[in-house]
Image (cartoon, rainbow, N blue to C red; front, side, top):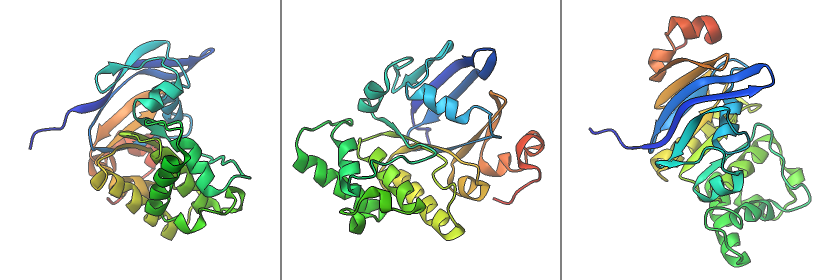
Amino acid sequence: MAKLPSILKIKGITKKFGGLVALNKVSLEVRRHELLGLIGPNGSGKTTLFNVITGYYKPEEGRIYYKEQDITGLRPHKIVKMGVARTFQIPKPFGRLTVLENVMSAAMYGREATASKGKAKSLAMEWLKYVGLDKKADIEAKTLNIVERKLMELARALSTGPDLLLLDELVAGLNTSEMMNVVELVRRLVDEKGLTIIMVEHVMKAVMSISDRVFVLHRGEKLAEGKPEEIAKDPKVIEAYLGEPIKV
């Protein structure tokens, strides 16, 4: 089977904070409809890489290409409108707005921005139903528990109409049952909706079980890249991060 074309190409990205080199000449290629797991120790540069891709940080060196277009240094709102969305490690909803209103606000400023509340509501409800929060649509977001906040954060990102979705520790803080439900949902977004996903995660059971490929960062540099079963047994990855081989 022929490989699908790339949706994202990261070429030699370097990002510094004063004297600290957070990313050092990182290169990565992500293919359409791929679920890529992005792993590594705390401080390895995973979230920094997300921030560079989505325009929150401008790199000192390197270029980022999305669908063959150079998006390096573009503002976040422009990148969202091109079809790149993300979630954050800690969801920060508009607490006094309803769950539906939170998701509508993203829909109104996303890829297919609409001034029509009716269209935004319809789109928001579609994604709330998909993630299983439709019955919570009319309650205040501040009343949601942790898994519900994570799912609302996911629905907000999805309502912007992405082709490329970046998930930053989506299952952190969830119990095993909640985690597996969310992991299955993420996999369906690739298989049913045709999205491309990069997933930052520390829970190895989650990321290894659904990723097509895994990319490992360590101290701001690429340490390894390959299929989950290869990464799980890689001596360099075991020494730097996993501690011991894991079953995939």
